[in-house]
Length: 392
Image (cartoon, rainbow, N blue to C red):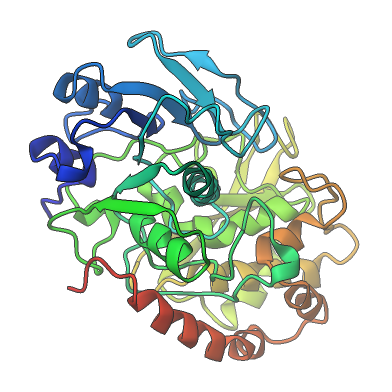
């Protein structure tokens, strides 16, 4: 078991010089805690009395209470500190200069999920752009990538598919911490803000979240455990279909299914090429909300047995194609809207490349589809090494 210290914990222990005398803002949510479950805003207020002037919350709200996309949060006043808490998933997703008027330095302390489509990175990038325009500083208090920092996986986002679930040409599984992502956005993708980092100590790129010794607090309602985070970079694709991704159950993203699935056929197909690093257990579940609410869904639970071998994106592409092959009449792509996009198909926004959906529909072998993006993925892997904060 590791003994990782987060950027928050290290900053509180030994404040860096770039914090001195600054008026502070904090981008946070309920997962912004130390190992004693003490929230970042309370730790910062105690360490720097009266310096914290404003709070900012990403998608799902200041209390992470909102369940789904396009469910907005209102601005509020923090009930403990009495300072404004601005929603960056409400009347705007881009912070305004007025929101930054009373701060000099925005601290960002968010638990990322290690996937391109997880919107916290987009919110951070918009904060960095506003900071650059207003002459403010952004400092990322770093936290672990729950999937580790070695593997990268998937196609790179095409520019025409830019959205709130993917702003930059990175793969679905990027293998970076949030601070490393911020460095990439700032240098390679031209934001150019005054960016500082409070790095972790004790974290290595081989570590999964369960290796860190840190407590898991759900960063959003449907990532309740590290197990749900482990499958998310692939299982999120079901959001672009009429198949349940397990929302409305106690095991979102680990479960998937629909009333129309014929499990024996699917099991026979999947047995021809077993999934590496995981087992699929047949289940029946009944969502209490979302797709197929109150209907019995036949499907599977993904049990990751060998995390270092498990490839979540490849796995879910295989599952997606298998379901479409076996259920051509019942399976359907979800229509818009999705994440404020009213014309483009949700699955294309999630995948970030129209050609991948078309090749899935043509039942092209997943190995061939993956081979087509291998070179660009290798180039990204080289690019990301330029922003590494942890080389062990």
